[in-house]
Amino acid sequence: MTRMLYREDAYLTEAPGTVVAHTEEGGLVLDQSLFYPTGGGQPGDSGTLLVAGARRLPIATAVRGTDGRIVLVPAEPVTLPPVGTELVQRLDWDRRFRHMRVHTALHLLSVLIPLPVTGGAIGAAKGRLDFDMPDGETDRDGLEAALNELIDQDHPVSERWITDAELAAQPELVKTMSVRPPTGAGRVRLIHIGEEDDQIDLQPCGGTHVARLGEIGGIRVGKVENKGRRNRRVNIHLDT
Image (cartoon, rainbow, N blue to C red):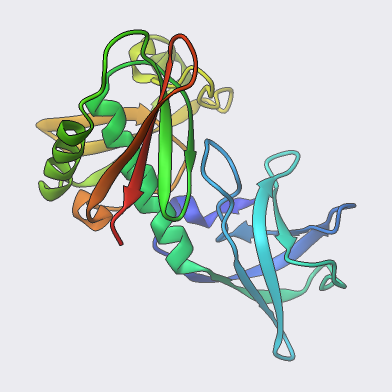
């Protein structure tokens, strides 16, 4: 199983790694990964591997492989460094940080619209959540003001862990209908927004997030789209 450096420290931008395997599709597996793999609506990270001899290997994305492995996908077909090669991983930090900002803002959106989430997507400039919202109009201006007010409060964002059994006993923690949190490993990661005595949000999530809400910056609420009889899509955009 690949060690998940992105989960240990979402702000880590450079780290060593050792090649442990190649995939038939031309991917690369390291002993530890700085790169977040595509999942939960969040795209896989991109960046560069620095190999001995000043060779640079651009990485387009990362995906989940088998048996807990994370596979790095080169930007183009190349001869891969041999198994056992030691190298340096360097993240496209600007892109990752924008994903962190959008992802955390979507958690806030799910607070302000307390309805089941039927889908979502995260980008480097915008994101969206789909809600099971059968009736009523959404006050886009009011929603935008409320989002930015929460961001301005600059609450901390942290993680905590509970057991699979504890999650099963608290089904209200799971907001997403389309993606269920991974269970079976004995424990589940929760993202907590707020102070200990002033909780804003608590839900299972394996993605990367900012450490404080103020890092999100300004948010604009875009289109609110009708995607079916009960489905409404709410789009948000980073100001910068």
